[in-house]
Length: 392
Image: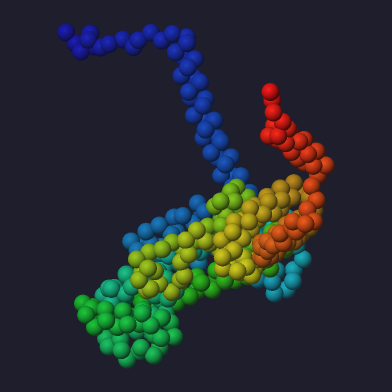
């Protein structure tokens, strides 16, 4: 018999099963359509079609492909920098919406530049590892590591450059680096390897320069974008907080308990041992640098930081609602919150009221209430009758 005789016939499908399959296919198409709408909405919100996914492929696995284009070589980033420089250099007049789009795009790029700086730091560590492999574990800060590398370079005796290192590192770090270099298993770099190290260090400087330029632009436009926030904590801190959160909308979603730890530098083994240049404070981030907190005594700074965080959430959401609704932006709310918080802190700093020491009353001039006098008289007469009168 042929194999076709044993072929199984397809099962008979009911109308209900066919309808469920059609609904599943329809839901899949809707999910795909919603995903496309989400991408287009993200592009529209960030302006110039610039968002995180546009550059994700650029920053992934750069070491495996030396010809891969880096972030600073992206045409969209170059075009954005040119537009910012035109506005800054020539004072080009722009509409409020265009300026807002530039600020939002700059905030997205600030987060990407920090990631790119970490990738460039990793490339520099890889290039300098044959010379001094222990250095990347001793100096954790990317820019400090870059400065140290460019100071030591190909010198095998690090003690010869201790004077220059003292300008970059603290005394504990200099001693640790010198001891580690004397026992290191590294070797001198070749000319090609040293050129690569210098190239990576130069690229880190360029990334840092672009980051400063974008931060300066965002700071200059903060008062027009978030006036209440700037009036409360200042334009510089406002720009840093928005850049760390990834945008005004993302910052408006942060609760007050998390607002005070944005930008916190977590403690590590190096920081506990005194090998880190950055000061680490638990539960304190960028907001601790606010002038309201710094003007308080040390015993009140933690309490003041929580109050500043609570009021800042109100100012951020007030500005975000005005931006979304297209209403006129004003710094009045931020000024009121700042003034009210200052008055509150001033009351905290007032000394406790001293207890009033009252003199004891004079027994000869005691003044009793009439009710006490009556009860005293009645009780005295009753006692007299009970003692001196014979009940028989």
